[in-house]
Length: 93
Image (cartoon, rainbow, N blue to C red; front, side, top):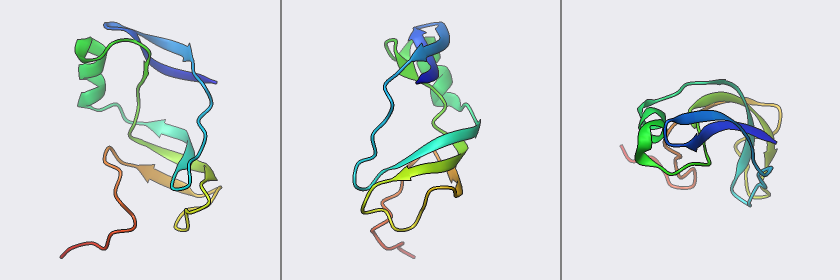
């Protein structure tokens, strides 16, 4: 599959990448709209070596979930934030 990312510091473009496989607590999502953030800019301008996919904040459709995922299902539209919460821990108030 194709992903847009850093080919080498300062150079971005489309690259071939392996199709992800969902682990037991994972969700595979198809981005609908991405929102580049400051970390993408830092990565693009040298804070990482090449071959890194950009766009980790997005609105996406869930296409596959792991066997332990119960709060999301394929076909749902979700917001993917920059931080991934631990859905199993209760919120502290």
